[in-house]
Length: 113
Image (cartoon, rainbow, N blue to C red; front, side):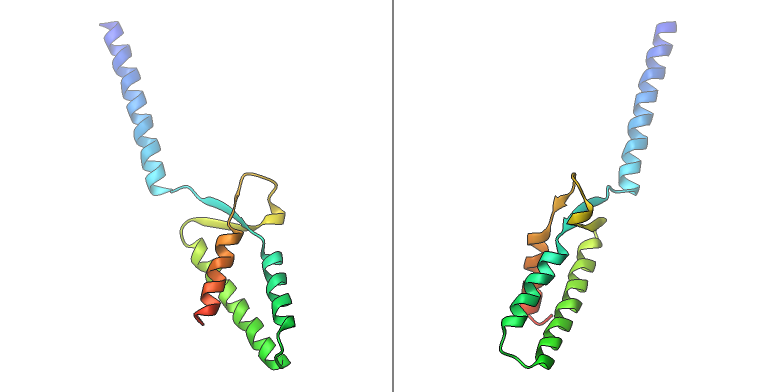
């Protein structure tokens, strides 16, 4: 009888712990940490703009559009429990999403979003 009580207690404790962990993951989903090389991306864009044969006013408009697009793309990416850090601030352990974000920026710029 004593053995049955101990087994029931252990089983109940394990089930309770599993339930608490499951509820915690459901209520507080895991936050993803990713990196983005914003400096390299922006430097590349500015270099491309500087090579264009456009008046300064048009270049300034392109740069402003790029800044607005960058902001929208980053805001869209952080809505799903994701933290985006500049890659120089992270030593290890985060996924680099630079290529994905650059692609999103390029598509948005091309579609004039």
